[in-house]
Image (cartoon, rainbow, N blue to C red; front, side, top):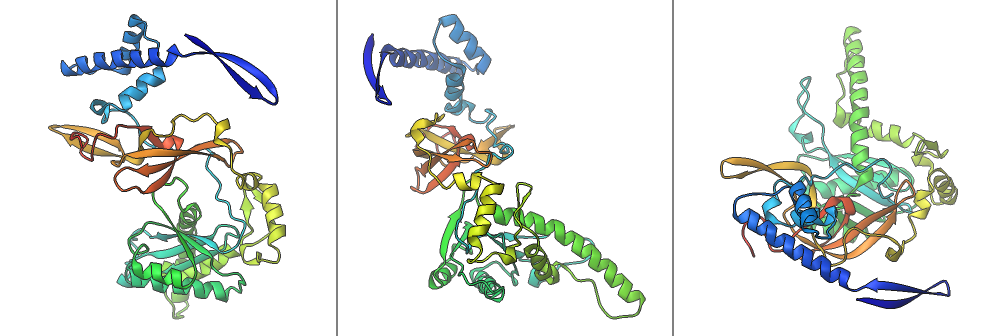
Length: 399
């Protein structure tokens, strides 16, 4: 049955015929295919996707291959053998982290691997706090003393604020973004940040996470290896000339490395801005932003919201999904080993959120709510798959 619907676009009236039987026929086809699939599984035969495609063609069912794949993804019998591992994001398809004000830091905890040349004293085995200003790229590196507990993290944040003041910055530290580390989420740390008037943002499943801090830790490890090699050779030379002095290790070189990074010119996408992190302040910030937007127009475009009505999303609001794992872990079913590549919690999509990527294309993400706790997370479209809300952590026992 067809029904005429009127639309208006740009003042021009458009008329379209819509087939109201399409949705009902598609639903009936899915019901028939589901019944066939359940019968096969009951007899011990597990049909592949190609088997389902052949059956649909033989029976004349009007179902797309993507619809068949979705049926398998949501079926608990296929939950272990569907290849759904999280893939690396393509070049420049990520969402740029946008800030127009100084003082917002991305933070994370970094570590150095064990070295066969020396042993790390227990005092420095807790790692170091790495922080970078999202806008100016100014770097802060602080050694964590003895542990990563709340008191140690408060001490590290105090040192960070002291380094911020010593650098001559006139703007305050306005916000800190961090992964959901247990020590950082403790009452002691949260009360300290609240007392200092610092806004705290926690990351969990978001693909963006603390990008600046994570990339900073990789850079620190690479540059620290170079500095340690240089200091090792320098210590050997001093011993030959009978001068006192030993090789300096990473816990002695963090301050020197931070100063070196803050004196390097800010380069965005291979384009120079003419500013060093230590030179950027509130007075010359407008000029820096002009050069930043010229070097990377996506940082300007990403400030504006995109109307989701003009974007074709893969999933609709209300769909139940699960998040992909970065890695694949093994699970045991009886005597057989299988792989699972999905997180256990089930989420419900509550909003579709389009955004501008670094490549000036449209990215697609979803605001989701965890069914068990009501927590909200934002996932990229390629980081989730549809799932049934009827299965718990063990994936075999219904709620």
